[in-house]
Image (cartoon, rainbow, N blue to C red):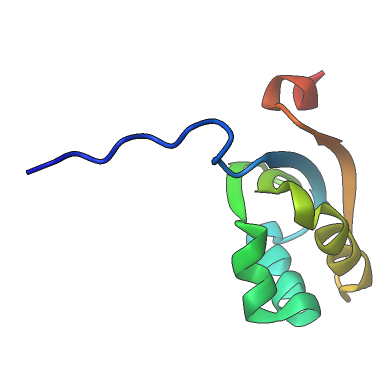
Amino acid sequence: MKTLKSLRPSMRENKRYLLVEGKNLRKNIEKAILEFIGILGMSKVGLEFIREGQDSAIIGINREMVDSVRASLCVFSEKMEVKKVSGTLKGLKR
């Protein structure tokens, strides 16, 4: 049985990390993206929850979809705010 080779760095998806503040973030973020850009857009976003707190969360998304995700969070009925965007988790924590 052959094992799969890992992807080259040039073939990997480039991520951006967002610090988001609000209530019920896991449910509301997914709902906002689905309502604004649909199922196909949700798959292109590549949403990944890195860390969740009481009123804040760090999410990882595809670099090309940052503007769409920010727009979907702004127009959603529940209040959510993107505090910071970074290319690395270390840069986000500063």
